[in-house]
Amino acid sequence: MTPTMQALTTLTPQEAAELIKHGETIGFSGFTPAGAPKAIPEAIAARAKDLHAAGQEFKVGVLTGASTNKWLDGALAEAEAISFRAPYQSDPTLRAGINRGKIRFVDMHLSILPQIVRYGHLGPVDWAIVEAADVTPDGEIVLTASVGASPTYCSRAKRILVELNRAHPATLWGMHDIYEPLDPPYRQPIPLTRPSDRIGSPVIKVDPAKIVGVVETNIEDEGPKFSEVGETTQTIGNNVAEFLAGEIRCGKIPAGLLPLQSGVGDTANAILGSLGAHPDIPPFEMYTEVLQDSTIGLIRSGRLKFASTCSLTLSKAQMREVYSDLRWYRSRILMRPQEISNNPEIVRRLGIISINTAIEVDVQGNVNSTHVMGKSLMNGIGGSGDFTRNAYISIFCCPSTAKGGKISTIVPLVSHMDHSEHSVQVVVTEQGVADLRGKEPRERAIEIIEKCAHPSYRDSLRQFIDAAEDGHSPFTLSAAFAMHERFLETGDMRGVDWGKYCK
Image (cartoon, rainbow, N blue to C red; front, side, top):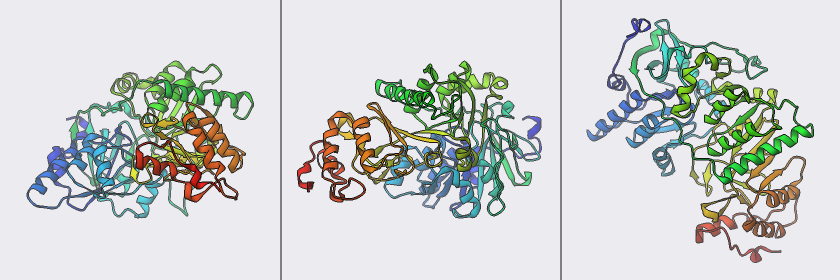
């Protein structure tokens, strides 16, 4: 026990779990697996199984910053202990429960979540359970590898449990910038004009009387699993890098570039790698919600000058690299609450270039980033909309096909729309780049088909355009889902009989 722990009650994970009652709502720390508690939620899941075996009900509402880890979302979903969940998830067991209608799921833009919690639209927050690198008797909490919505959960919760994780050094103090704005009509402009600006506190400050107990652990974050960069993702990355380099050459982007936001996953890693390697892309800054492995090498090489983020979503090896030299990284990385990292006001002010991934894109430029075949949830909208709708340039990327070529990601009409044509400016696949800015509907359709669609689907998409009825957009309602229906019938989008849709 450290000196800072002497005035706080130490609990076992099981003792902490016993405090949680059926029907309560818990706000957990975490944004991706980074910074999410582990021992306490796993103990809650074990308790739920025991209660269920004894014929007793036990389910809780689960709020987080974004997705979490196997100890939290995975364990609680497997124990059938979640009544509702918000705002984003990526766990396969949880996803299955949501898609079967067993778990209520509220998908929402991540920037608005804290305000919605403060307004009470998700009900009262009974508990905040947060992972910390340090906690003091006077109520100062140093978070670990993310911030997420933790400040709001701690301020709104009736009681707090702290999971003090010794895998994260207490010297993380200074890596966080905790700022929670007032709500309308009292909100002031957020005083941030550069990614590196510090505007808040390095700690969350709470009434120490709310801290019911501290559970000590020593568990490393789960860490994401990235695939090797393949030919398709590498080509997408190169296409994005060359497009932005071209924008700099023609003066549409300042010579020093603008701050970048990048989504999560293998494609995002490939894009950042390509940007770092391109000779005509200058050293740049990021104002984003997640930092992945590729960013650490870019920071070390000087290609990435500063990164403002909400989460360090790093492999165990890269996290150890950061922790081994925290003093050096502290002047180059800053973690903020998602309400600030994803804030539309800041995105528009800084002129962010947003780069996110899509499940499918239609010929008008509408993007589906959340649902397969219009109904089965994948993960959620996350922060992509926060950035897309306010970006200086908004870019969406995806391979041109999926399922071995049986699915075209370029379709006549998306089966679920998360980002409308009015927000999406650039579409990139391994086939090329479609710049939609300043183009009317037919021009956009031609640009996307000829630049981004796979050659095996271009004729089919052209036939959809040719069959279009008169109107502002080249569109025929009866044919809009012909490719999706073909896939559901045959397992392959190819082979649509467009003749029956012709005028």
